[in-house]
Image (tube, rainbow, N blue to C red; front, side, top):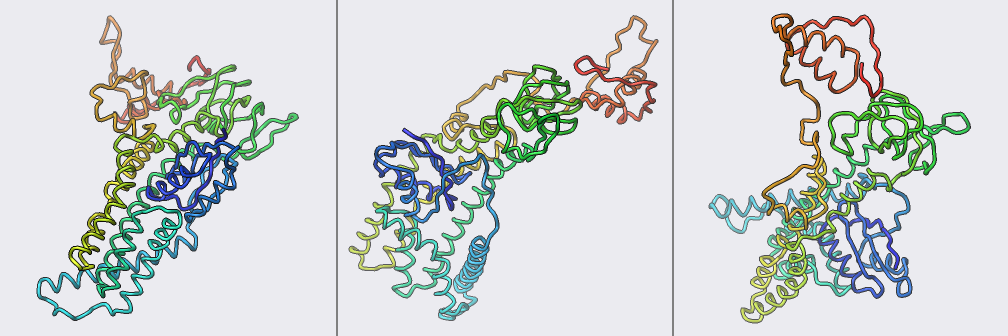
Length: 469
C-alpha cells in the first residue's frame, strides 16, 4: 500500500469533495481517500498493483479538477488571478440582475408596477442565465460523464426546464440563489483556510546555519537534520532541535500555550516557531518542515475535517440517495400534473444543499475558527462529542490566561509593617526589573506605572540566565 498527497485545484466546497471521494472510491485499488477542503488536498491510499498515481490523477481531472503531487511541505495560498476576477465579475453581474428581478416581483405584488412590464430586457435575462449558469452546467455535465447525480444536475434541469417553458425570470432566479449559495460556501472555506495560513506564518522563512566557522543564511525549507542553526535574541527558532551553545528565555506560547517564557540551556529541547527572548543560541537540528511540532499541528488542523462526525456521515449518505429520489419525484409530478413548472418547483424545493453542504461547512468553519483562537480540534467527530461534555480538566497551569502575567496583590511580610509600605516595595521591585525583558518584569513595571510611581534608575544591572537578576 502507498499513500500520496495530491493538490486538487478547485476543491473549495463539500459537494466537490463528495464528487472526488465517490469517483476514487469506485476506482479499483484505492483503499482510502481523505479530501481536505481547507488545504485543497486529497490524501489517497492505494495498492500499486492495481492502480498508479497517473491513473488516480486522470480520474480526478475527469471531473473538472487539476491535480498534482505535493512534493514539498508548503501551504498553497490562493492568489487573485484572472480566473478569480472572472468569477467575481460573473457573481456581481448575477447578483445585480437578481436583485432587480426580485424588486420587480415585489413591486408587482404590491401593485406598484403593472404586470407584463419588464424592467430587465429579455436578452439580459437570458445572458444572466447563460453566464451565471455556466459553472453549474459544467459541474452537472462532468457529473453525468462520471455517472454521478449531484446538486448541480438537479439545478441544471430546473434552470433549463424553466427557460424551456418561457419562465426566464424564474430560471434566472434559480441561478441567482445558487450563486449566492456557492459564494457563501466558498467564503466560509476561505475564512477557515486563514487558520492554516496563520500557523504557517509562525515559522520564519529563513535561518542562519554555521558551516566551516561561517554563518550562512538559507531558506528554512533547505534545512536538514544535523545542521547547526544560529538564533540571536528577538529571533524565532526555525527548527526543532537541541541547544549546543548558550542559554536564553524562550517564549513557547505558540506551541505549548504557556504564557511565561521558559528558561533554556545546553541540552534542552526547543521548538520551531518559538521566540528566543534574550540569549545567543546555537541549536543542533533534529526535525525540520512537516516533522516539527509546528508541522504536526498544521497537519492536524488540515486533516481535522477528515474525521467525520456521525451527523456528517448521515448528511453525505442522505445526499447520495436523496438526489436520485428527488429527480424521480419531479418526474412523477410532471407525469401526474402534466405541468413542467410543478416538476421544476419540486426540484428546487427538494435541493438538499442545507443538509448535504451546510453540515460539513459548519464543521470546517468551527475547526478553523477554533484554531485561530488556539484550540486544536481533531475533527467533526470530536466537535460533536463536545456537546456531551459537562466537565473540563486542564492538565497544566498557565494555559487558561490572558497570555501575560499581571500583578494582583502586594503583600508585606514583616513583623514591623510600618517599616515599609506597599508603594516602596513596588518602587524597588520596578527599579530592579527596569531593564529586564522578562514577562514578570513587564508586569511589575506596568503596575508601577499604573499607580503613578516614579521608577528610579538602578546603579547596576546584570541578568543571569536561569538564575534571575
